[in-house]
Length: 196
Image (cartoon, rainbow, N blue to C red; front, side, top):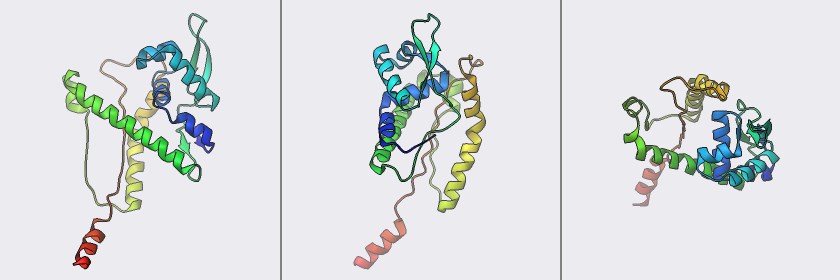
């Protein structure tokens, strides 16, 4: 789904709304009450933010819940990633990117804080990978595509799981890749030398 409407972009720029989208993608259809319990926030707050997301097509009404008093919400097509049109609202795009990055950094730090409480199997196998590599822009793009291809079957499993239970030992795992080119260090050195 490509977004160009600044109001729709702004509708995404809220941490709870991003949490709700992630939760509904991971678990399938859920009520505002279930979302509130899962995210540790009020049902009323979840209900308000789900309605705002629905206004711009990010979620939709999935019919009544089990008790028929509450509605279920779902992501219309969890296989379609949300993209912001390149030419639209650079300031809003930057605001949303900052929010996504901050949210991911908080999740990484929260995992680091609770890692010792996890099972030994997960402590040894999940974690952080860092590297410094020399790449061209084309090679960086190729590496990004390879990374996405490697994750694709697991992401597809998540999208197709809906409300089904995981097998023993399985958990939802959040991945975040950021390729951040350093400033041109060599031209900086040359500049310093020419200043003397």
